[in-house]
Amino acid sequence: MRNGKLVSLLFCFILFQAMGAHCLAVTLKKELLFNRYSLNDSYTYGEEERSFQWDKIASILDQIEDNETQYVKYGYLTNYKNRKGKAASIKKYTINEYNVQQDEDGVSRYQAIPLYEVNDTLRPVRYGRDGSLIYILEKHPQFYLVKVASIAGKWLVPKKYINTVGNENIDYVAVIDVSNQNICVLEKSDADWVIRSMNPATTGKYDPPYRRSTPIGIFVLQQKKRKMIYNKDGTTQRGGYAPYASRFNAGGYIHGIPVNLPRTKIVEYSYSLGTSPRSHMCVRNASSHAKFIYDTLPREQSLIIVIQ
Figure (cartoon, rainbow, N blue to C red):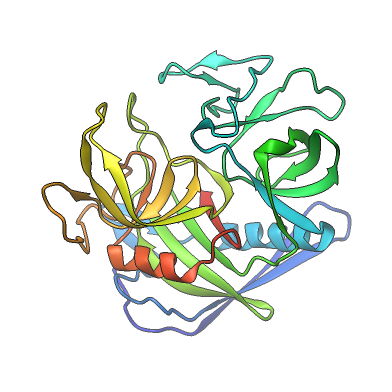
């Protein structure tokens, strides 16, 4: 069930948290700017009932707005392809099916950022994901004290693993739902969050040794590539490219339909969108929707939120 018409429908969610008498509220308003392949709020896939989880999305946006009022500066963790240095080994780890150390939450050491407890900088206790949104609380000579948006508590992080952004407000988010295989884009407009698109997507499938699940979390859009070149699995041979790629975590991008060689022209749509996880970690979209995200969401001032 799809709806390609522009809609103006007001959603209001008043959300209460167990924080004394503190009440947080966010308003979602639907005014689509991209209206191709648009899904309804609730729809059917096979015998499954699927939907956009607006209550969960509103709750996360509430938390983000609340943090913006509490903390002056934000940034993100960064260690793409271990370019900032291999993360130190944590105190307790396991070896995963990719033959890489991981922490108790399944975060791999490769491309990760070491998180130290506030009173112990000798050895980290867990890993943070590349691209994770952080709020900077204090700056020290070698470490920053931060709050990671998707991890409870406060953490010390070596400053080389942090990119600071400043005190700019976040005005754009893309929300990826790995359970419902959909994606939406929202824009902050005055006091409202306005829904700009509602589309099918295909997320990452956990299938070692080459495929990984799309990670859950709150990430900053770090990089854009008009063409993201990829190799054939397990080789250095070029396999093709994905158009209009927006990177948010390690090798995870939002992008259009992959173009496998010898084809060279952009493919607009695939029957697999909105069905089940099957990509290598990235989030596939209709290529025109990937271009909408690529053109609309500013780098380092937009969030990519992955929910389940």
